[in-house]
Image 1 (tube, rainbow, N blue to C red):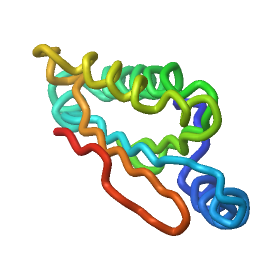
Image 2: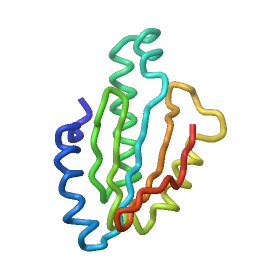
Image 3: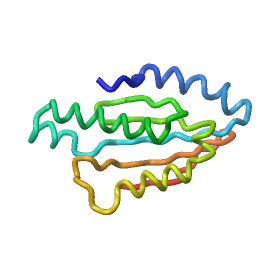
Length: 130
């Protein structure tokens, strides 16, 4: 539906992170997106509109993290493994995303965003917004 890699691909990719990033001290971040109100959209407007919402959300995420792999790991959950140029610009990108959600947007296009940064076996929460 979205053209993104799935949860199985995500699990395989995460398994390689230890060697590719942590062992070589390369920096990366994990951004988790949960699209809010998908069930409400499906129930009130039909699954076709829900599918449009998911496609729109995946396009939105891929536009902002264009140099990083993005996965759809659940019905309305997406993950970007932010690295390289996107990692270097992560704060600016997250500010742009944050501004996109404010002021009041149509509820069916809102999402919960969690930003996690990982460096040398340390996982810390950097931003949490609902």
